[in-house]
Image 1 (cartoon, rainbow, N blue to C red):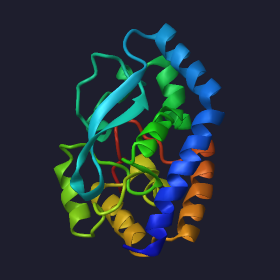
Image 2: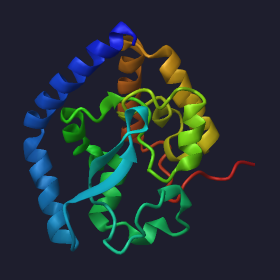
Image 3: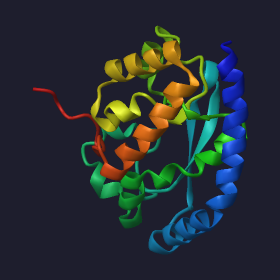
Length: 200
């Protein structure tokens, strides 16, 4: 294990604890908005693939209706928009739906930066990452693939970005990803409900 990865775990836990305290009023406000604008639970829970392909339960703010097909990657939806709640649309574009993953970090299941955790049934992505050793790291709230296309890139390219991150993981790369993530979120760059657009 690279020395930085040990430090990374400590930094993740410390910053997650600080942010959870600071953002607690926002977390409560968003939870109330979700509850009063659509029926169903505040949190969305789903089985994902974590470090070394171990399954864990990811937490998100619920952005879709309760009748949405379960365990189906968003990129496979042909009509994703009709399932998204009014508040959910804002949460997804702003990435605020990811905030509950602070608790996943505190539980030792995720990191701030790393490959986005695949669904348990995204076998193509899991296999592609296997070939590049990208399943060996803790999955992240954001990552190198997210700032290079987000929803718009196909599986093979996403895995390639994840493989690049594994090979070059460092404090400086994490800081770069973090800064670029803010830009990506503010501009909603790469957000494409229903998955990647077809290339010409």
